[in-house]
Length: 286
Ligand code: FE
Image 1 (cartoon, protein in one colour):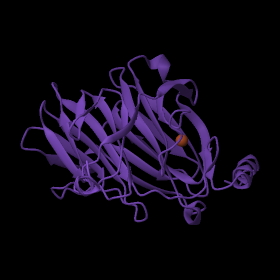
Image 2 (cartoon, rainbow, N blue to C red; image 1 turned 30 degrees about the vertical axis):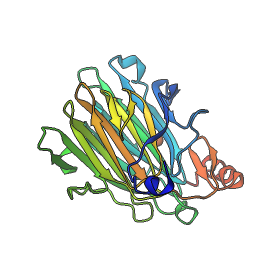
Image 3 (cartoon, protein in one colour; image 1 turned 30 degrees about the horizontal axis):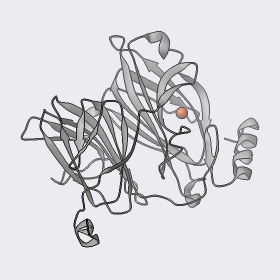
Image 4 (cartoon, rainbow, N blue to C red; image 1 turned 45 degrees about the vertical axis):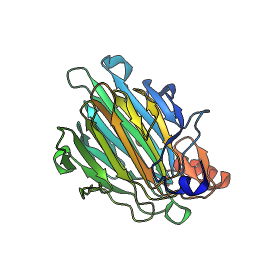
């Protein structure tokens, strides 16, 4: 293929895929860690992606008791069951199915996240999104929306797109915004054979996570259920449900391109800043 032809192909293809690996966090919550593993350390600005899914309450009922965060944002998106959250500033609420909490930890927040079962099933995601150095010590803030407040696009083929952030090619706009990295976060349901096309800005990091069903990405690559596929360069992506209906997340954002220093629940630019965070937490300065 010549360069000219290559440049004329704006459609993104999968350049890497991974199923993630089993992990345990909080008080023994079993999950699959998909970003933030030895195989996939990060996908700037995404620091971590966990998928929790179980119909066995003992896998998750210990939840995530009080713990701190500093320097980034946590995004919790539920598909089934509920997550009750409570923070050190007195905020409390419940994230239910198809609800989202996009929490900016900023200079520091201490919170608990406790699963509540619904017919035994708990299923959802937590994504960590980095903040640039200028915002790491900002005031904490929430963008939180229940299912009915998310934008829902009904498709002619019977599929639907829940838009948490970004806007679809058809103009449906999600309620969560972040000016610097302009995220896309969409939960897409397609019938067998249905095709979804989405513009993604050149240079932005992007991934698809296949929640159920296999999907064809671009012209020839199949992403199987429970796999994350990183999208390569291009200005759009086309995704087709294969033999069965399919559900997937499509997530994208502009990279921050700054040094990343991690220490458990703190993500800063330098090791010294991480040490400072541990000190501040120990000395009740959160
Ligand atoms: Fe947390």
